[in-house]
Structure formats: structure tokens, C-alpha cells
Length: 577
Image (tube, rainbow, N blue to C red; front, side):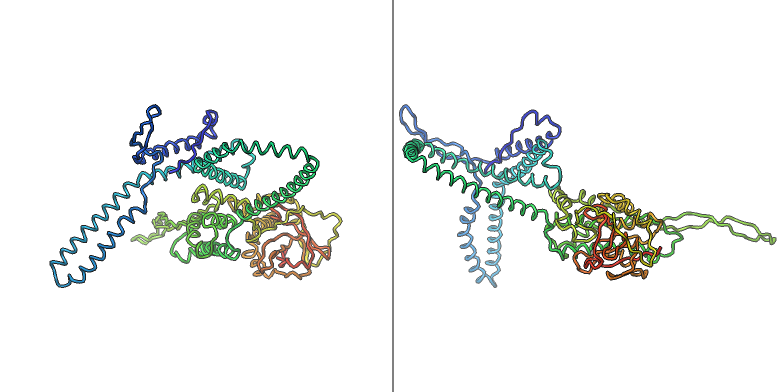
């Protein structure tokens, strides 16, 4: 069995608090691996030794330097012929044992004995292989501890190289490759030594040939100078092309490794399934009073229902890699159970009411009569999927989850709810707005414009009730309306909540609607799939363009403008002020 490379650390590294734990873990794993290796039995082999003085040859029994596990094949080959013969014999006996109780009984006894012998052999073999299994397990743990120690040391020496989850993941992958190369080098040490020996034997001949070639070059140095110059130019060009190719491969590998591995339709379908589970939970809460009748009072303590679609996709991609609606179902159940806890508890209070009664003489009097007052407490606790990930994912899975969150799977608009536009906010200087017949509301426009420059969407998504960042364009629009004292419209999803609200209130206009006003909501469908992906607030129109304030435009609040006939404008939510 090939030993893993044993790492060596300095006293300064051992004493450093940042490196102490991973180094101690790696060294402890190395000790366990060495102990496991020492328990592997070594074979005794004959070795001939020659006395240099007398020339006498003696043979001694010594322990083999490199113990190897017993051959798995030899056991099978050794037993196979015997098993085949015994099987044939038992087959013949069965043909004649019918009706002969004595023969049948003796035959079954013989089979039982042979089965016992076979099981004993297998048990003995398993016992003999146990040290090798233990050693292999210890070496695997050592490899994992070594890689972690090297990674922590690299981060300690160069913190800037691990400033975000993506660079940390890339750095660990590089360390794994280097470690594997070192392991292969350790395994091929013997052949390398042989090659070095052969190289040493040939050194003299090479030197002599080099001297002869040098004399020839000096006689034709001008021609060789020109040839050398051309050769260097060609090498430079080839090296440039090779570097570009390697860079392209590296970039391609990085993009591939940080992109959601599932097909787009499956990503969207799984997201819709999870949203449907949340909608069902909301419906269950809304119908509590009809599904649990008979209570005097219903008390609600409810956290927010909702999630960041990219957090869900990053979680599932880290656990399942490429997933489909069918393969993700069980994991969706596990996530949902960890994210939401709905509890119903009954509470009974003894209360008193005043009743008027009449005594035997006809006089009325009041008495306090106790009665039971039944209360149903409805409690919903929820947490973001990012918190669920910390609880349920392994360290490697959590690392990949963070990479996907950092890159949004290289598909920032797959679930809608924002714009990937990274251009600067536009200026409204010199724009002459054309007023329509609808009054609009300049105050809400001024509130929206005052938020231009905000990055990250805080406080809009937290105001809405989310515990962590979500695609926050709709939260921004709802927040602006809320600052005006409006409780509606209030929505965090463009297609599922925003558009249905405006349509159900008769306040919807299509892309060709001509009488838009300041403060209206404008919805966009970036990929033209019929579903709204983004929303903003209308500032006004100059007759050819519509000007907007949008949240989550490249993760920032910006002023933008579009042609009134722009095909990605899905329509307008018309506000009645």
C-alpha cells in the first residue's frame, strides 16, 4: 500500500491560531495512518547475502519491505475447481435421492457441512484483509486532512486570493490537483531513480557530442544566428497561442463549474413546484378558521412566506448537481420542512360573565358565572434557505452553494425579478415630459428618484418581511407605494402577484397603452416568454420614450429609459391616485 505524503510544518505555523487546528488534525491523521500501516502483516521472504571477505553465500528469512494484501483472485481460482466438482456431484446425488430418506438426509447433512466450511473460509479471509481496509480508510482521512491544512495555509499566506467563495473554491481545486500530482510522484519514485541512473551513465557521451557540435556552430555562427532568431520568433508566437488557449480553457472551465448544471426548463419547473408548496401553506393558514371551527378566538403569529429562487437553485445544485422535477422532489420536501414550521396549539381560558338571576322572592341579582374560552394559536416560523443550507449541507456542498450564490449560476434572470443591466443610471436633464389626462403622482416619483444609487436592495426586501436578500425590484416598487401610506398594491413577485393585482382591480394597460402617468408601475418580459421578469416605476414620457426608476437593475436603483414600442415592455399597472 502506497503511503500518502506526510506534510511537514514549522513551529511558527503550529503556534499560529489560524493554522493550529488544521495542522493538528493533519498530524493526528498521519499518526493514525502510520499506526494502521504498521498493523499490516509483512511476509517473510528468502534473501541471499554474500560475505564480501569469503564470498560465501548465505540465505536468510527477512520481512518484506512492502507488504501487499492477499490476492483476491487467488482465493477464487483456488476454490473454483473444487466448487465446480462438488456442485456437479451434488446435482447427481439429487437425481437419485428422491424416495430414499436415508440418502436424502445424509446428503443434506453433507451440504450443511460444506456450507459451514465455505463461510468459515470467507470469514477467515475477511479477518485477514481487515488491517488493509483499516489502513486504506486511515489514508483517505489523512488525504482529506492534508488538503484542508494546505488550503488553510494558502489562505493564511495570501488572504486576497480567497476573498470570495468563487476564488476559495478555485484555490482548493488547484491544491487538490497539486496534491494528487505529488502523490503520483511519490508512487513513481522508483522509476524516476532508474531514469536518473541511466542519465548519469550517458552524461559523458553527451558531453563529447556537445563539444563537437559546438565547434561546428562556431564555424557557421552567422547562419546559426539567423536560424536562432527565426526559431525564437516562432516559439514566441506558439507560446502566445498556447497561453491564449490555456486561458480560454481556464475561463471555460470556471464558467462551466459555476453554472447551474440543470436544464433551464427544469430549473424553472422546480422553482414553480416550491412556490406552489408555499402557496399551499399560505392557503392552509388562510383557511384555518374554516378547517378548525368552534374556537372563540384565533391568534396568529406568522413569519414571512417566501424564498430567494437563486438560493433554492444553488442549494439543489450543490446537493444534486443536475436535477429534474422528479429527482428534486425528495430534497424539496426536506428543505421545506426545515424552512417552515406551522404549529397549532389550543389554549383554554376560564373567563366570567355576568348573569342576572331571580331568587325565590322574585328579586333579581347578578352573579359571575365561569365558562371556558377556547383559543387557537396559529404560529408559523420560517427561516431563509441560506440558514437551512448552513444546517443541512456538508462543508464541500456548502462551498459549492456559496459559489453558485456568488455567480447566480451565471443565469441571473432565469427566475425573473431583476435586470442584469450594469450600465450607469441615466440623467433626466433636458427631458420634456408630456402630460396625459391621468393625474399621476409626482410625490411617489420623487421618493423613488431619491433612492437612486442604492445597491443591494436594503431596506426594501427587509421592509417587505424577508430575512435575507431576494430579487428585490418588486419589493422596491411596493416600498415606494408604502411610503405614500398605501397598503396596496404590495407584491414581491411580478408575474405571480403584481400583474394579477392590477388586472383584478381593472387597472392594467398593455404595452401600447398611451395614457401612462407618473407613478404607474411598468412591467418587463426580458426573454419574451409571456411572464414578467422585472418591474419599475414610471417617471413620465416625452412622447417617444418612457422613463423609469427601477430597483435591482444590476443590483442597484437606477433611472432608465426605453422606447414606447420596446418589445420587452409587457404592460403597465395603472395607479388611481
